[in-house]
Image 1 (cartoon, rainbow, N blue to C red):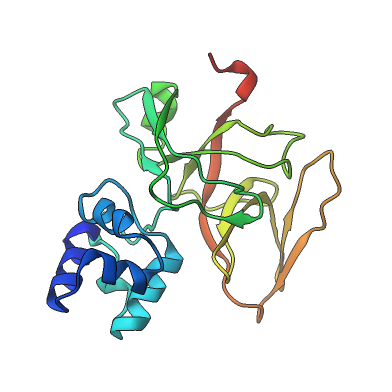
Image 2: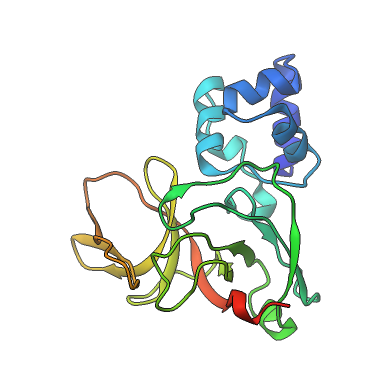
Length: 214
């Protein structure tokens, strides 16, 4: 079953309105409607809250058809045959909360060859300056959820408090360091083995600077 079908099934089994279900997931009724219509996908924080409230596993919410990949709010899967990627703004992906699912989409052109090489990639708009030496604020980035970051690559991750960050990835045997690449002064984020989960959302495989957009 799809995530949309799973959410609709869980909600109707418990005889809840979309507004009541939204309160469980800490989102609006409109967001629940978008989930059930397949126009948006719940982020990990919402999935965890649903699973905890109904005492079920996250796997009962996550769609098997997406191979367990939960996209960030605002992310739209890319169709490999298309060169046009629908975009939603995520908010401050470098160190802020993910935006609500209700934000309005706009479009950006992505090379078809890039889409074909990353068939499940999704697009995000960058707000913030923690990576502005490489990726200026306002740029569009394509994130591949199937590519594990290598040391030095740019990754989008969710931390334990469900914040989304985009940083350079450096992982040793006992520590993970997420490092900014900015003209501003940002401290490295360092995580030990016992510091709680860091979920890899995906690796940035392409970007387009705002100055190059029409």
